[in-house]
Length: 177
Figure 1 (tube, one colour):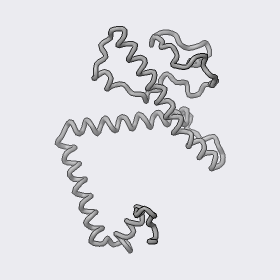
Figure 2: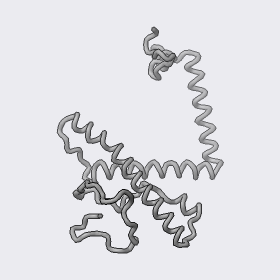
Figure 3: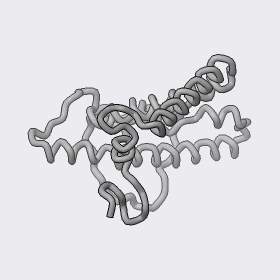
Figure 4: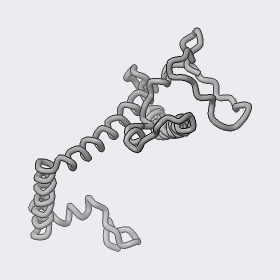
């Protein structure tokens, strides 16, 4: 079997690049791929400059990505900016837990946003598509990242009671419930 080739007929990316530019000099095919990439990049830039809708779409995608990164930094570091494990495997474990924790926050937020939207619609509030487009499960102001949490089984399955956004939902110790 050819080195770098999988049994499914696939070639790893770095092996393909190595074949297209042996000794640091691109082959004819490698040069053609480079030119094709430049054409695609030029078309993208021209569309970005000339099409306001395209710019808005790219900006919206960047905003979502940045919001996800902000939430991940907040979960991972709790605004303290430190990895507490002093050995490599511990740091990998700490960072490896970030994905599931981030997904759990997004899922929980999605469930509560859905419940709140349904409650607003049931109360007669005009829930429009424009309003729904502005909602994001990447919000985290309601989460106390540095608190202590008890993970107990709730008495009944389902979501907690939705509260009024301006009511006092915090206990005296400042911990969110």
